[in-house]
Length: 355
Length: 264
Image (spheres, rainbow over the protein chains, first blue to last red):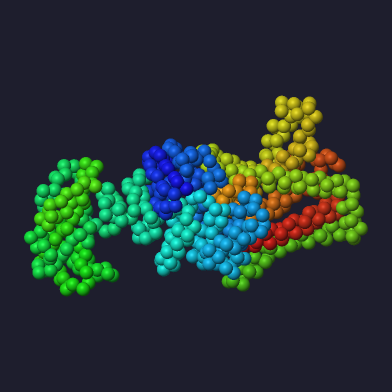
């Protein structure tokens, strides 16, 4: 289903939970709503479902306004954070619930439920009660229950939050496959950036009730529009002024206090002088600390007034704290005047383009 | 020390419960089984039991219906402002704090034959005070908190997730209530029913005030016991009391059973 949201707003008391949010979602896409807890993601999802009434704004499904429709008539499936399985019903009856509401015949219901149980791979557990299932199994049943009545839109509220880390990874892959197999437009809420990046076709970053940015995970990572997005997705160094960074001498001088400079750790090359690819574009720095981060070394290096975090691959020689090194900054993002600039090291190559 | 505690507990139990009950029993059968039986099958007693039965039935039905509705309203209806909710919540407990006799008096002062409302209703052929409706009202007043207070915490505990899930699956509020909410609250409701039955059967003060205790008309089993004692008919009084006590014990056993089911 194609979805459009215009100027959607919702307040709880005086707190603005959702603040003039606009977006459009294409048919068949899997969208991740990503942002810190309490940012309004779940409220947006609940308004799409009709479980919460917006104070202002419009929600359109396939171009038709659905604001006035109750959840029963929106043609959606909803997977709740704690699954909300009907605890007095068996797995079979849970999945069949939406179908009995539609007054399907007994044999139709049985066939559809068995189809769903096969899809989620829980054959033989039809008669179990929800409390006899593991977290991952409950999650699958909740998913099947929401999909059984063939909704046009699937909404998932923190679908993996209540599952332990190892199962979560498996389930993530599983859910992605299921959704692409069924081909249903889906929106899920998460506060875990790794989850959003891994699962979603597109992510929407929500902060303090506002939509900060929407795009593919790669786009949002590569070209963050706001300092918040830059800081939230991936690791980054945030500075106030690019003035004293070697290679960025002619960058625009931001006047406002709100201006920010963002440098990704992987955009910083740290090493002994003979290792650096383009020494003329590098500055000198002193290693302050070195930390093993699983797949890379994280090196904290002091360059002039700044302290920067950089990544260094494991196969290179280990740097020692106190050592003098060359620091080459390949690129940075500059945010000022409501604008976002991506700058590359001008001593390497003079090239500035607005995003 | 532990032994002493146990002994004291047993003693108190014996003194307060077992001995009086034994006394009731021995007095009821002091003239043999025939005395006990004739006291119970006396037309006045039979009528009193009938009145008590109607009273318990009507009160339990009404209290269950309105108690569950009010509990749903107080817990689920987010449209009501917080202040109104707090006020209603406090009012629910009022009958716990007010003596039943005062409860009865309130009804008498509001609907008695000498009040505007009472006279108006009587003119239209509706007799409330000194009749069954008044007794039902008085007993309802006394038993009102029992159902609400049983169901509210259960509703709060189960939360709204399952109900919302039912809505998103297309179920209306009626189906959602019966298929999703009711199975979760039914043992709580049963517990409330049992409490209501026990309380309604044993209620004396409020009923005495509004009924006028008219023989073969508005006399309930409890007020009949009171009258028989006044008339020094101890065998009759104790026979009735024994039956009431026996019934209450059965009801309370049911309560224990319901409680265990509720905890499952």
